Amino acid sequence: MNETITPLFKEEEIAAKVSQLADKINADYKGKQISVLAILKGSVFFLSDLLRRINLPVTINFVELRSYKGTESMGEVKIRFESDFSMEQKNVLIVEDIVDTGITLDYLIKRIELHKPSSIKICTLIEKPSRKKIDIKSDYLGFTIADYYIVGYGLDYNEHYRNLPFIGILHK
Image (cartoon, rainbow, N blue to C red):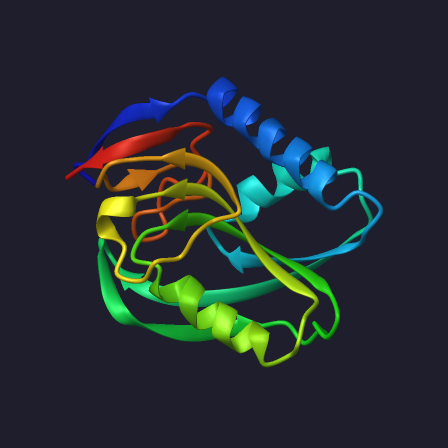
């Protein structure tokens, strides 16, 4: 691999942002249970850190969706794994690592709405507004970035770099 990576967000910055997001979620859902639906694989690091800071009753479920090949969006979403859980009358919190075009989240939200949840909210670590094709708004948003291809803290390039403790810009 001949890529180089320029750090964008340090471990400490990510940890502080995750704590802020958890505090807001704790306040907004006080006295309620939430059903977290995490999008695999990229959200795993973010999800783990976020859930350790949430002090509410939580259930966790997963879905694996594919919309990228390399650094390019394929423009369509494919489900690779979907957990079987009831969302009816639940407060569903989708946890996503990054919102790029919005196509993946739009697809997922439409599927969830068929199950008649009490609410659907989105918690996203990173958004790239300049790339959005569908206007998806995160209820809980960590960072907004320009159109960089980023890796680390769960984000990958062809399954590499997920384990970096920081988030960096990939240069090919």
